[in-house]
Image 1 (cartoon, rainbow, N blue to C red):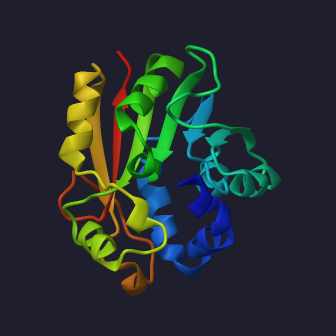
Image 2: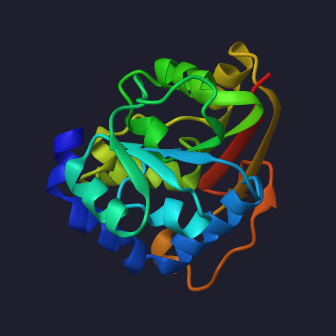
Length: 206
């Protein structure tokens, strides 16, 4: 997985320029649940597109090439994977995992690690391409360089995992209601899921 993102890191980063309104719509949905203050971490920070725009100061990723760009964008980065986060217990007020969970070798272990580094009553924020959505089906059919390696999640699957780990106050916001090449303006996020291709799931550590 690391080699795919290391090799095509420029292609990955340029996607956000080519699909600007999809990116801005996703940011708007994430901001619905993102804490206004606190020490935040993005797991799978990539080139820092989300962390920079959302004011998340810390990031971790296994791709050295992507981390170079994230660092240039002002993110305090560390090389590492979600299954073994290079941080101490109770280090963060919130952790964001945007798209990344579908690319992790052991998602359950990742969520346990996130819980370990979160403070009490702090927040986990997970952004996914919903497997059951029109977008999820399109991505599975298209088999792009990146998504052919992904194991997409259904929203219900993520909720089950979070509940099993005793996360509380689970909520969802959705956006991207058309295929990316059909979106020409920022879309307003809606509560819940079932219509949008991109869903933000948030929950609190007990």
